[in-house]
Length: 51
Image 1 (tube, rainbow, N blue to C red):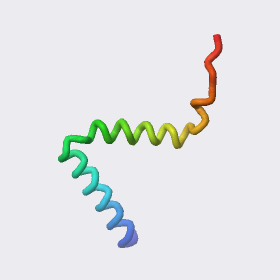
Image 2 (tube, one colour):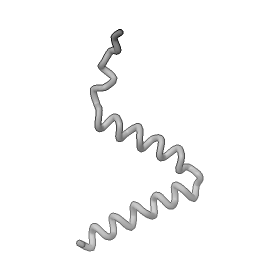
Image 3 (cartoon, rainbow, N blue to C red):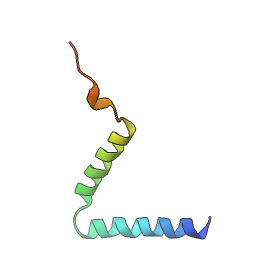
Image 4 (tube, rainbow, N blue to C red):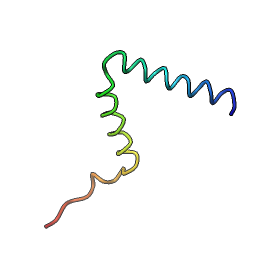
């Protein structure tokens, strides 16, 4: 493992701990899941449901 990767991983853990300590974890996870869905399925909003 490269030192830069360790620092980046440690920074990510510290940021998540700060979000949790501030009481914003639920809001952050909702935001994160929404952004991940938009990234994975960018054109999904273009589809029309038909019956």
